[in-house]
Image 1 (cartoon, rainbow, N blue to C red):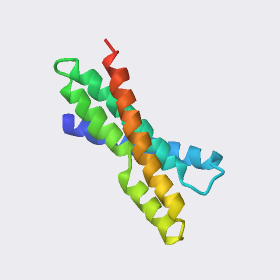
Image 2: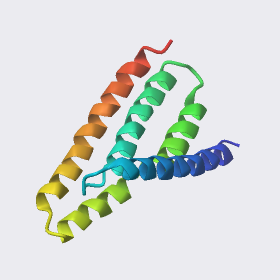
Image 3: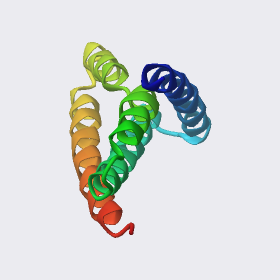
Length: 123
């Protein structure tokens, strides 16, 4: 049953990623793909919340798997971020590619830390 729920959550995560990335793309006025940065940073924050909260509650491993591996695994996207950075490099936009990849790394790690800290506050 956990496998089925994880798979369903993964599909939902992929649909959410599409909605968020598309929504950010509609308002993004820069040539840097910000949607993927928003998706990955929010996924890292949410995974921090899930991890900290599940770690504090005995028996929450199934929930952590369904939400972390399924929902947030389907929502986040390292591969898209890599392809976007490569696309910027191919266009000769070295600074934008470095800012995109570096910004994603910093935002994602920072969001993970914030999520872990916030998750530790959940009773």
